[in-house]
Length: 339
Image (cartoon, rainbow, N blue to C red; front, side, top):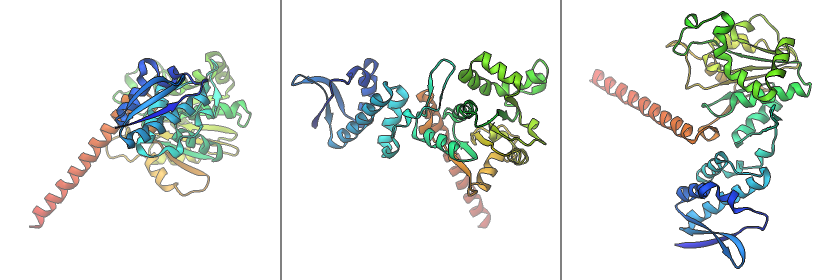
């Protein structure tokens, strides 16, 4: 067993670093098999790490990045701790930069909207630099929310004249005809995540005024047909539920001085069985086209409850095992028929 001491500067608060009930350091301890204590050594506040040399090295690296996060953003969220620990475990710390300093815009209540992972930062930069960006990945990675934030920023800076948000109105277990109300009432539940993001950014009153002036438009994907969208920031959400024909139709609506962001999760399609996803086909066809970026999120970019990451990994594992079993069964049947 080895012991190592890390001295903290007088300005650093160990309470922020350790977290409530020391939960931040408990996560580091569990991840790297070490013991961490906060002590006063020679009159100076210090962290003492005990364990095997390799575990101590990695724990110290994680703590170093946690200290940087506190210095840059003033706090250390549970999400940041989990992301830092996972990055150190994966040996991918080169992406642990100061991405939390990159404020995109502020919400109606004055809260800054920032990338929370390196993957989110790359996504935001891709949107800044390119005309069309595909954001593909699991739930909770901020695909839609960050795209809406970038749209609001572009509108506030007068780089576009309007924001257009759309998504396919595909039933996920319910039929539209059974929902009460007129057509708008029927499609509102499908567009709710887009409303929520805009309410958060702009506030209800400002949002309503922009809707009335036509500066913001939210509509089902089918309403995009036959239009050319100039000077607009256009977001297609839940694009995994668009057919190949709908995707082609949408992409060809692009006008001058406009941007498009297409978001979706290929593991959560609600299309009828056997129907190919337009998002999957478009991401393959357009992957090498200039000024189009296909950005893939991973479970490490999930910024919801930690269990969401574990759920995604569990489903991925089950799907891989099912695919492997299907392959083995197919090979067995082939051998039987061959013999």
